[in-house]
Amino acid sequence: MLVGAFACAHTPQLLARPGTEDRDLVLRVHAAFARVKQRLETLRADALAIVAGDHVEAFFLDAVPALAVYVGTECAGTFGRYRYRFPIHEPLARTIVEQGVERGFDLFYTQQAPLDYAFYVPLHFTMPAPAVPIVPLHVNVYLPPQPTPHRCYEWGRALGEIIRARPERVVLMASGGMSHFPGTDRYGSPEFEYDRRLLEALKAGRGRELAAITGEELDKMGNIELRTWATLLGALGDAKADVYCYEPSWHHGNAVVEWVP
Amino acid sequence: MNGQPHYRFPPASAYRLNRCLFALKSDDGFRARFLKDARAAMGELGLDAEDAAALVRGDRDALLARGAHPYLVFMADLRLRMEREPVSFEFF
Image (cartoon, rainbow over all chains, first blue to last red):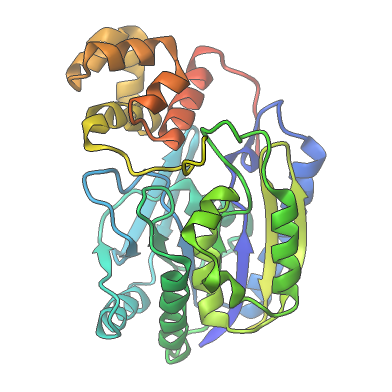
């Protein structure tokens, strides 16, 4: 069953803060993460399915999956001094890949791939103790051509149906967003007004609007990562978003959001 | 960006360049070898002279024009700067 849903920013400056980042802003995002952690404890999740876009860490140009499921017994990743290792909820991961394929999604799977910070930055701040097993679900956001937002939404719809039919209490989390343009001339000027308009639509329960956005528009607005949100919203339908925070830094729209499925 | 997407299909001609940026981002051993002797490290991956020159100069525009992926340029540069000029980070 699907018992909770969240979207979390994952910018690594929230984990290791250089002097360029406003400390108070970072702490406000941490406070929103703390609320998510508290909710995860209350929800007594058996598994946390986290949808994120690998930042060319597990998947380089040697093999570029559009949609992938991690189905090993555990997964690990490192970023500088940080070292993470998480158990994978293997039965749920395997069901997702098997039933996903049955439903027409030609999923890539891996039993051994490094975990990207897009997965573990939110988990660093929100994982309850003892740790809940995870199912990492990759959506290609950085290596064009990426899956369309519509396709992500449809995959999310199937994912939601698969999870709802399971006996475990599952929380779904989307990692990423909002507007940012790493490595481009636009790095210092994200599209914060676009983010705010989109959050208003999500608060009103109009999540399906994300499915109608083109990939071209997401790129233009610095929101290529919202494919992970489109996936989550496919599972949620018209649930209304509770926006814990929207904190625009000089380069990134940091949002933390909950939906009650 | 002249109407071009910010993130474009990485041309196959830039595979080695992107492979090198990926290694600088994600391979601690390669990054250490690069910092010790950049030319030798780039030689391991068969970079041509123009790619190597752009990378040594840290010339983002030239790297992008040669097909480098913007995110890889960004994160490779960040990881190199973290090694070269250890700025003070607050670790959470």
